[in-house]
Image (cartoon, rainbow, N blue to C red; front, side, top):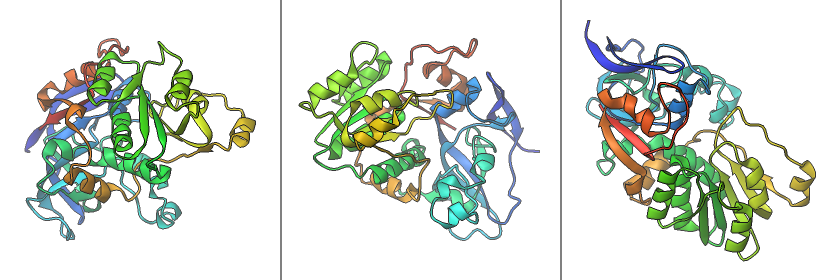
Length: 347
């Protein structure tokens, strides 16, 4: 049987570069992709740490694009040779959430996500349903094509926030998600500031021309108050998963807080009376929501400065080293300083 190279997640802390069988088209809507490139996501780091739901013996990698090399009998919308970006979150289309326009809450997502619960893009080939494929235009190269779904989640956030040209915006956390929100805010808002504790990522924020504060060194609530002439931020995007209390201290009365980062281990104390008294809007959302096509359009028209976003491109065979660069010591599973924003593996 034909085999392929793949990075297989065995269990917490165990990722193997190995050979496994190339998947074969079975279902009528199956599309077999030759993976072109795959991004390494912070979620993959959390899976390796055991801080995210996972399935042992799964090929990770949910940020990927590839070339269509084989299709099932009922595939109609993509054809052999197409380059496609993938929405890794397979939605059933039939549950009440899907049918009422809130497909991010589909009851099947948790059991069917590509690169989390079924084999993903850390491999030479990947089998995906046709409905997850979005054809890429030639202006979007393979490396950028890995980030269409990542951007789609952020576009969902932007749709919810309805950012305006006179808004003061604050983004807590300058990882890849904070980076994308900051690029939008630079395009739209009157003023934007970000926070970050990692020295490498602070340097990337400065390279992007952003005002950046380290919350371990300064009182960011005081800083945003001064930065906005006493007003505080109209919009606070919490992109770390652990700073909602800080976000609530930094938002102006009547302002919006978007808790976007995810960390299920974090608990926070909220005084409901303060939410009511200061008319604070806390906006919860999840994943993308019909935002893959808008993301492709944004990248195609080069609306965001993506140059500092990509730290390096490496071959799949060096994939284990990517996690070290993203701050995870693979021997101890302890955190250490990062040396990367986004790493993409060319397959």
